[in-house]
Each structure stands twice: as structure tokens, then as C-alpha cells.
Length: 333
Image (cartoon, rainbow, N blue to C red; front, side, top):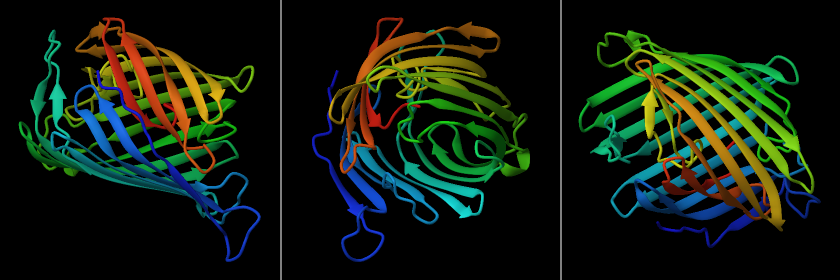
């Protein structure tokens, strides 16, 4: 197992006007990426974040992030995302674009070794959110994806989605109390797929979260998720750096999944904090259910200038006895 760390960070504050303001409007955090993925190996790159400074109230606040990373095996990935609040009164807008050539892999039924397939992908996501009340909102989204796959050839798809969101968290980045819930559905009609499919189908998702403040800045974070899919395109999956961390990403694939997570987040010193977690999931494929679980712990390292953005390092152990190590950014949920 390769252990990875982030050894250098840099941050800055942007003033709202020329001169020496009392407080910055936006903060910027930059970090190199020294990561490790159980399948792809060592990952190197850099990340850039820009977000409103704590206490600042810029007009039409923007949250921006860029990731550039690659492996010694020749895989690379470029991702950019921007969320703009109050684009119009009561409307938020999020756009994300990514391109990569990280290979695809699948685990044949009953096998512990994966099959590898080279691929190229280009993805574009676009979401518009409309506030109904202080806590309730509705959203619509459109996702477009193009792929060149060693086995499946070239495909282009586009699918619209819609949903409802409830959010009572005290903060978006590192919440200490409150709740969050999203119910959404995506539909892929045949006309938006580059190939004729027998059954294009749909996907429904539910995401429930709760944050309970404890002693000395500690937080108990709870999450339950559900996903149901139908058709030839959408799949439900378990495993990876955000869910069931004792397993590699997409270790279990099916048409229906349920998952629960519990994290205890606690301070250690300064901008360094720790977590312990336990996770379990249920996933069905053609009526057969699997119930994998994992547990583990990790560290969070705050990035300058204010520690809000964090480097996340987690070690997960599966119920099968396997260990996985992940390095990423910010809280899992």
C-alpha cells in the first residue's frame, strides 16, 4: 500500500476594492495532489479553490474549483466546477465540465480481479436551482456525456433531471448541525442517445443527511442513500472514496442500492482534525442482494488561508478484510 500526503499548500485573500480592506471578499486555496487510488495507483496533480471569505457578502457569490491530475500509467483528468448563487434573485446556477482517459474496469460475478477497458470521456453538467423558501428549493439539470470505450465503442448521451432539495445546515463546507435532503429523478429518452437502445430507462435517487454537534467541536454526521435504476444506461454502484471506503470504486454494481454512513468528526490540533466511520450498503442485481460493509478512520488537513478547504486522507477496511487508502478533498458529505 502506498501512503500519500499533501506536503505543500498556499492560500490568498482577494480584496473587494483597491487598498487595505478590513476583510477579503474571496479566499483562494491551492494544493498539489499527492494521492493514491487502489486501482490506478499513485496520482499526482494540483487543485485550486476560490470561495467567499468567511463573513464576506459578495454580490452573486461564486464557488469555483479546478482539478488537474494524472498517473504514471498515462491516465489524466481535468475537472472544473462553478456554482453561482443569486444569479438572478432566488436562482442558483452550477456548471461542471470534465475530461479524462482513466480506464474503465469491471469485476466479473464471483471474481476478485477486475477486467480493464481503455476509454476516453467528456462530461458536461448544468443545473439551475430555484429557491421556494429559506430551506426548500427545486432544481432542473441536464447532463451530456461522450465516451470512446474499448469494448462498447463511441456513445453520446444527454439526459434531463429534476428534483427537490431541503437544506437546514449551518454551513455548506463543514456543517456542524442541521439536515439536508434531496430527491431527484433522471430520464434518458431514446432520442437523446447516439444509439438505438431496447430500454433506455430512468434513475431515482434519495439522499438524507443529519449533523449533530457534540462536545469540543466534534460532530456526528449521519447519511442514508437510496437509488433505483431501470434500463440499459443507468447503474447503481457501491465502493470508492465517498462510500464504502473499504472497497475500490464501483466494486459492486447493480440496479438498486441502499447505503448508510456514520462519521464522528473531531478536532486534533489547529487545522488538523480526525474522523472515524462505519458504513454498510445493500445492492441488488437481478433480484440478488449483497450486503458489504466497511469501517475505518482518517485525517483532515485544512488549507490556507482559513482552513475551510480540506485535504482528506482515509483508510477503510472492508468486511472481507481488504484495506483501501484514499486521498481527496473536503468532507465525504
